[in-house]
Length: 447
Image (cartoon, rainbow, N blue to C red; front, side, top):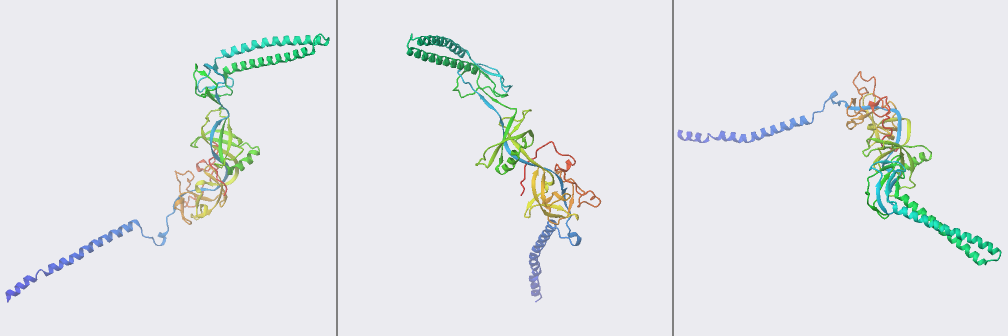
């Protein structure tokens, strides 16, 4: 009996071990799940910080650049793409046949009006002139003889020594010889003209291009190749186009006799290469493009304007003195329309709808919505909302935002408030009017 009990105890001994193994199957997943939840919670706290309570819920002031609204002069400028066009472009060609004997210019040389360019062999035309002059002398002798006979016949006819018919025939003979003499004189003029064509001179002052025909070649009027091309450089013109919507404003000023200045800038619109005046307006609008052509004259004494060069023409239409101006960087466009962020005395910003006018470089005319002395945000507007608190700081990348004494500045730095916008539209140009670039870029129409 004791032996049976001992055997049963031996058989039932593994039961607790099996129970612990089953329990471990549930504990391990729970540990993994708990660790995963802790990781997720930690990442959540790192990526999304908890909201602060009380005073901590207030956001820190946004760093912005600001400028003060002021008054200044705005220039209304119209910009159009143009081409430098000489007032005279002469393609020198021969008008007679003959051998090219000599060339009297160097390629690229500036020649004066009347300077020698090309010499064609004149000998055949000199011989033709001599022959025409000899024929004229012969025919004049015949004419003189016929006139002398006519006088004798008229005297004899009065005394009835000859018939009237013979006198009349002699009159007709005189008229024939007169016609012959006139033909001879015309032949002489033609020969002289041909001799003139042999000696080609510059019709205008300008620069010659590359020589296209070398001496020794036989020239004919039917040749399609020119001898050389001569272009007038001083003065020179720029033909540019403007939209037809701007035509009325330009035409009103132009017909009034006002000299409208035009500045020419290079292709990239970076450097000014000439200043001239508007000379003429085309007589029609191009219906395919909706533009009108205008011509401006430039002295071009420095010869920076080159024929067929592409330029950007800026026409100064008018100057608006003493208007309210703001930096272009302050103007925003969105749901309210055209607006700015104005900085209030409590250091917060408010959306202010404005009406704008003419744009002059980095300045823009304010028609309504702002007054001189208002402070507006010019940098950092993408982080602002109505009522956002701001702190005005300097911004080296934006010269217009270089103040730190506005309403949002720390205590003790608000005495000066924001610096006013200078006439040049840049804060670093305070007190200095920009005359280096007499004409600005672009134009904004009044809405």
